[in-house]
Image (cartoon, rainbow, N blue to C red; front, side):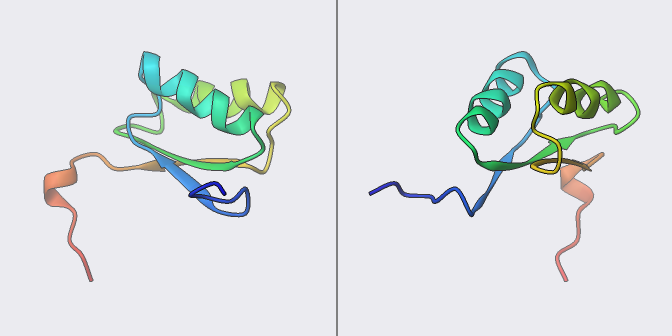
Length: 74
């Protein structure tokens, strides 16, 4: 039995990095939903277009986390 199900969302940090890009791709190919974090949405906007062309529209989202040390937990 898999540890995560395809209904779960997988978090990939640094999604615009070389290795993370391939990890995101493999999870999407496997049918998983993926949330990727990047430091700048502006510089990583190409990822949404890339994965949309790959047929994973609606299963991939990007979240900007400019500086993880400044994130405050509620």
